[in-house]
Image (cartoon, helix red, strand yellow):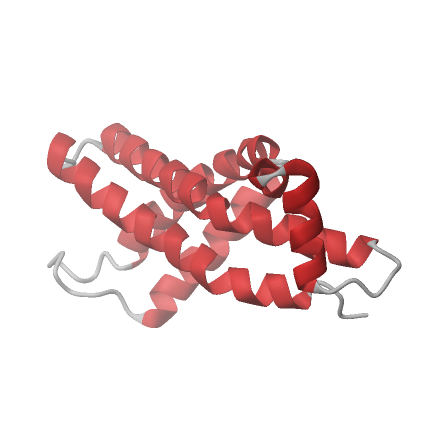
Length: 157
């Protein structure tokens, strides 16, 4: 019943860390290069491109994790994580771990772009009572912005 949990658990933390790290680093780099000031359209592009970068980079861990998890769930024999990994590498090489990488990006990038553009806008709008951009929004504000942005992006996609 729990076959495939090991790669899912092992891959979740680095995949998420890469996602948010790449998103924030890309966002800061793009903001420095292009500035954001009050140009809403420019901010949307920066946040959207940063979300795409985060997703592209995190998928280098996410996709192999999913391939291994699915293979462990699919196989009727009691193959171990190491056996499945070895079988994939022997039969398909490293590319075998990236089957579905492009399809994953085609599915995830549009959703991530919508989610992060909306999240950043909602975060700013909901925390409008704080005049200084150096004040960190309250956790409830961040949670609400993330929940609404995630629900809308999932609904749209």
